[in-house]
Length: 193
Image (cartoon, rainbow, N blue to C red; front, side, top):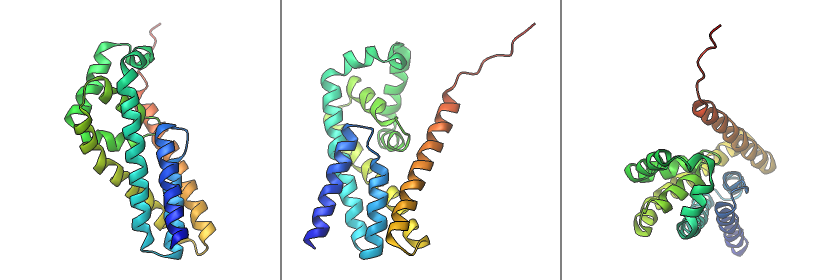
């Protein structure tokens, strides 16, 4: 049991670090841990969801606080926020659909930090952010844990299900990123002779 708690603590730390430094594949970490937990002790999957959610929540809160402190300067340096209308649109979306916007931002690769920045810059209070982010991080962690459990159901060996879960998360992330880029690409009118 001590080893399990230690592993869950490490998972929470990895996810927290990945929430602050967005290059760490936190979804893959949760999926792999859930796949391994499902092979060894299926009830531990709930603890994996909890550890992933706690790590994501604390990391998001730290990122939000840092962005709130220096957000205005950061926002003006980012190309996509230089237009005041764009920042206003993102800010309105954050205020209107706090939980859904925070959840969607976690699922789109590279989407979380801009949404956190918009929330911090536009004055979404810490309390509102803290309340809205809790269900978003739990849903995110549960989704990625479910991917790991599916990997466990398909593959008989723990290493196979962990590898499949990580590969599936990476493929889905790339697909979502590609679709997001395609939707955001400007439509160019056809050239006239």
